[in-house]
Amino acid sequence: MLPIYVVNNFGQFNHLIHRALRDLDIDAVLVPNTTPPEKIIEGCRGIILGGGPAIERAGYCSRYLDLGLPVLGICLGLHIIANRFGGSVQTGQSGGYGPVDVEIGETDEILAGYPEKMSVWASHADEVAHVPEGFMLLARSSICNNEAIASPDKHIYGLQWHPEVSHTFEGKRVFENFNRIILDNP
Image (cartoon, rainbow, N blue to C red):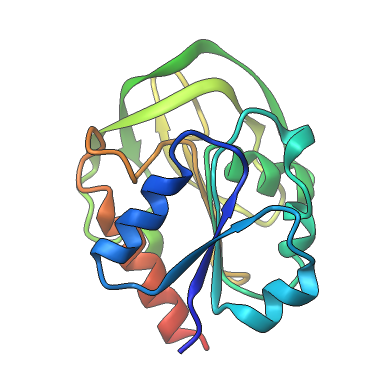
């Protein structure tokens, strides 16, 4: 079985995403965001777009969204998804990393098994201002209206928060759910 590719967008937690997957016995490979799309589609069964400092340094990430593979975007990965599909991203009012309570509004397969409210660890230096057409809003918080979005038909999901850090409530469940989505939609 092919691995999940974790795309390194120069974020400080990308190695933790890779580690979280390995700890769950999910085969994963950390790859640079300059990997040509044809190598991505040949080498993996799903993609996680990791976080990073700036969308200008996101390499080929927006092109990976056109490959027909399931995608989970985390922080900057969410912003790449929003921009690629016609949404918009703006500077957040709350800034850097810290705890936030999110409220799950729509239950979708990526957030299956989570309670209606939970505490997560997130950066709000930038955040999605407008959800792209065709995407549904999954979660919000008191400081960010768009904490999680999804296009279930395309199997594309995005989170503002970091499920890979220990401060996030049961963060590894997101990775288990994403793996299940991939297995159920070959």
